[in-house]
Image (cartoon, rainbow, N blue to C red; front, side, top):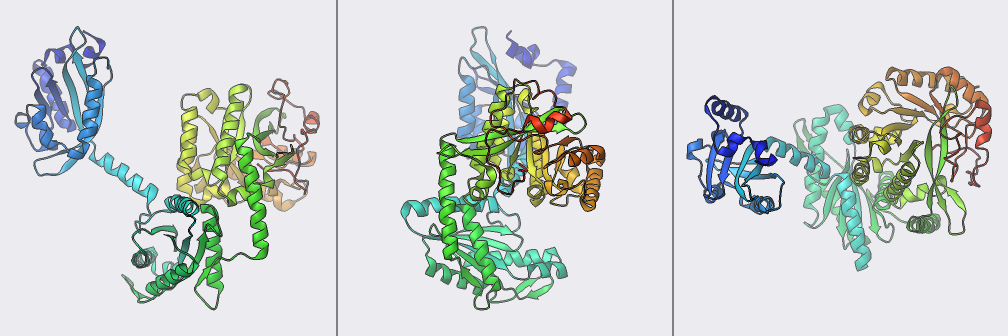
Length: 602
């Protein structure tokens, strides 16, 4: 008997279980609600046991005795997938298990999802002679998955696209507009005073108003137009093939419909008004990020206007100059990505107690076509405006992992943007690269800014959980800027916090900064988190932070970023003395520092 036969038991291969074993097996299957079957391939006969009544409404003796008889019980839409799985396992050289999910129908006509798992029994020549399997009902799990998929794309209250899905739709509309050389419009519609309604009458009432406004907005647009919810009181709408004149007409129709009659709520009839910001693309914006940002600018102008509740975004001459400069920088960044001119400079992070190097932060640099090295501060704002953040963060990840793979003695921290913290493709790339590489994962630290983390605490917590599950550590950057609470830290479960540089500068003489840092330290120590002080620029700051109990120090006093560190130098993976720390990294490979002379924070 082969090992595969033995997995199902020699007695099962013989076709029966004896006595008490058979009763025990049948009882266990029925108690679990599972259904077991044996399919004799030569005779095309089926034997059933277990909870067939719970699943199909039929006793085992009433179940079909052939595959042909089973087919009417299966959902026709799932049949191709099931038949493909069967065909794969029936191949002569296949040694895999049958594993498929599909829907079955009971005697009432209701469908249930089942997970069908089984395996083949083969004769001595390797030919399949029978198949043993079990069906387990997974309807609730499928419903949960469907709900998660819905929430990943749609707003739970209104059923319209959520912000992420709306941005994806906007990217597609922009591509169409550029390809077909015809304009489109993006509208941001805001309900005025919704915060006051929520405060006075409760969230349920404000939700009723938002839901009614969504229906009214939808009634004013075409079926091909796309609607999404952008925030607590705002909708976004994409109207393709729409110029300025038509966009204004659409906005007037929408606002008139929203405020045309009171909204019926459980708290009574409520009058609602709105404002609208309009951007025409691709004339005024060529990325989804830029479109949404400029639409918000137009919305603010509409709210502040005494003349109209809808405003179209228009460029001033200064804005035109700024956009041209941004476009040129954006093209340089794209070229640098294509030509591998985006680099990492590595800045040491040392123990506050003995100055031994514990890890390095990889700081982004761009080498221009002329060979000049530009720090991230010179282009990162433009990158965000042009929607290139995800591409940059993916490149940074590739650079960091390549360095970790080539150098086994170091750990590296990389900072990612708030956009990437909600980017499933970046997370999938990280999982794919590190799932089976724990020796690499344990040397990678992913930094997320505190303000980005607090923007969507639940989404960030899930993001952190996946990263830590791979074996990586997670650092909360710019700690103190977002006023993190005990509850936030508990939810995020990070490993390291990096104190915002604004609280570190002049800490040796600033009593306010000293008090703030001590309070923040009390918070981190309560959760047994490691702490890093950024922007340490002189020995007095380093000495104070060491005395206060900070774990690690980072800054120009400790060491400047280097493009090509000599990892073989024992000073890197081992230790720097306190006297050496300010000197060892004094030369920084010609990096251009920000004009203010102050250091970077990541």
